Amino acid sequence: MLDPRLFRQNPDHVAAQLSRRGLAVNIGELHDHARQVQKLAERRAQLQAEGKRISRQVGGVLRQINEKGNKLSPELGSAPGFHVNITVAQGQQREDLEDLYQLGKSLETKGSEIKEEVAALEAKERDAQSKLRDELLRLPNLPSPHCPDGRDEADNVERRRWGDPKPAAAGSEHWQLARTLGLFESERSVRIAQSRFITLMGWGARLERALIQFMLDLHTSRSYVEVLPPSLVNTASLTGSGQLPKFAEESFRCADDDLWLSPTAEVPLTALHRDEILPATDLPRRYVAYSPCFRREAGSYGRDTRGLIRLHQFNKVELYWFCHPDASEEAHEQLTADAEAVLQALELPYRVVELCTADLGFSACRTYDLEVWLAGAGVYREISSCSTCGDFQARRSSIRMKEGKRNRLLHTLNGSGLAIGRTMAALLEWYQQPDGSVAVPQALQPYMGCTVITPPSDPE
RNA sequence: GGAGAGGUGGCUGAGUGGUUGAAAGCGGCUCCCUGCUAAGGAGUUACAGGAGGCAACUUCUGUCGAGGGUUCGAAUCCCUCCCUCUCCGCCA
Image 1 (cartoon, rainbow, N blue to C red):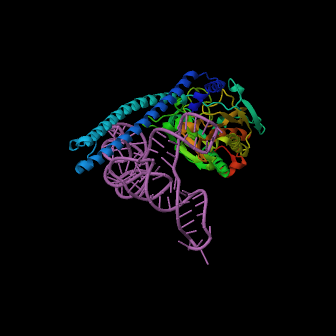
Image 2: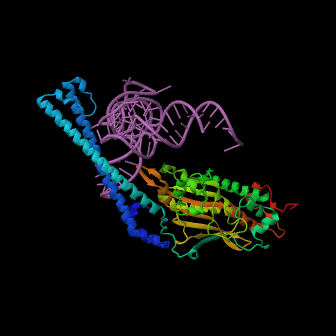
């Protein structure tokens, strides 16, 4: 979420930055709404202060009446409210008591009036506040000043390459290799669930597990804390990281509960510290989480229908940082390097592409995509997306840090480290051999317990 | 799922309608003392948010698990919910 203050104080800046993303918003309206909320809150607080003063005065008057009444007639002194029997008093004393009684009564009346007024203002304020929030929750993050401007993905900028991409000699794509090697069941998975689900078998299942464990081990050895979060998350969690309210059609929802299948570990990891204030000395907090990810992939009919590239359910190892706002730029570079380390360890060629403003995800202000070389298909394919979200998710989720006496929103960053299925695809295509087998890269051999994946001796 | 107990400040723990944002103790911080010395003394110390100021800060609001209600006024009374603990049931 963007800072409501920005809309009050510098609406033109917001409009200009959003237009870099190719977004035209009615900034004047938002500016007015933000100011209105502010004004209502101010007036409400003033009135509340007056109400508070008055009820204290009532207390004071009551005490006086009780003291005086008590002197005249001890058994009346502790009478509740103003119902003192002032007839026991005479002359001046009686007048004094009558005056006090009237004063108390009028204060009570005034208090009631203020109470009603406050209630009315509160209702207005709540209404305006939630409207503003609804509007703000649908606006994407502002792009970083470093983010290259662009109109579409063609304007993304290649930053660097690692390794030497070359077409595979045998030239099979991963789904072809998987078929000969018996790594997964395509048709039978439709029977179990539907299309875009996969059932890994034999060495395929083993390889998936090996990759997950290899990546977790690599990252934890680089001082990430391992997390295994819930796969079902509530609406607040999805809103906090930016998937809701705008992208509801992208996630699977449980019909009878306020729960959704998590589309990425980024969601539960953001929610891990929701409504918390972390000591600045604790930052950065770096987490690595394995999780299955569930996505509806609405609007991608017909694309990547074969193999492991685009599935409703896939596995991913995710890197996540909570960091000091002044340190997030370096953190972004480090996080990206940590994701790259996986590809380097597996000796898979890749390139780093920086997304332009038009291609930036909703919550991100700057993103590096890692694209791994698919030797069989002969293309680079996104395998990781490393983003810094600035304070965008932190504001949505209310995650702050305490530095000295001040509380500040911290920054969050996330990146795949890596998507398991796509890693397997790249690995199969890169390490395929003319005889149809696939060599296991050295780093993975301890996890696989073999050096080469060969077709089953007795294929079905 | 059933029964019971409980949720108060960094911690322990008082507090059943009126300057109570909250006693006391512990802890923290500041200063003093340094022949009462594995100490002693004085003072200070909740949190969050808004507005204003370059800032030290000022000011307002909210907060005693959460949300409603009663009242001029609620930690305190009423309702709903959540969480924790114990026991029973069920279960991987």
